[in-house]
Image (cartoon, rainbow, N blue to C red):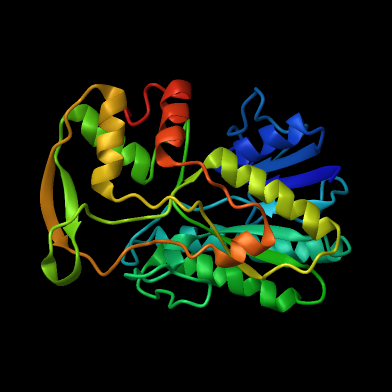
Length: 304
């Protein structure tokens, strides 16, 4: 890999991907909205400030592979802003695919999400049932389906990423739990099967550094012309429950976590990584190691 296009280069995953690519001597071309890309090790070599869903018409320069890591903010289906979610997540991918096809078929890694799956009590593989009742999940599923229009023109891998976390993240589960532990607020533990009390939702986690490293390896294999799955779970084998996460964070913060019983849950979000292990080196960073690195790099995680 000599060059990569990162759409959403200012985002949490985008910046880490750019940083690791630059460390490897890979030229990076970043696209994101005006004013979002910052200086530093996560800054791309070439910056293009534009709206990916309406202004992206041509590649700024030739690249070997593209990554779509942009995402719209999650919205409820009954809110007018939900149209913006679909415009970015689905419309942005459609436009990106069209540009890549016209550039000769530059391959694409599309960052989807493990939350497209309906929760289950057993590990979830790529053929498992998906959900149609959540706007964010549905926008990602629509984005995945866009690649079907370009079969034979743009080779695409849809990466369903589970439980992404790491330094600098301001939203999602891990910083949310860290914030509640900091403030001494109770953490709700959704009940297990038939209302049994357990540690709450279990979810596969993935440190952002491990995600980026796996994506770089996958990008290289796409460039080499290897046949890869069109849909692939990207997660580590570590799947703690909410109680375990909170206890681990509390140890770093010197706090005592508080818990309360929540409503019953449908299942857990544990990724089946069998296909991943056959495709790329599976990330194996455990929660204890990942949190230690995260709090060392970002002592204020969850404070805002």
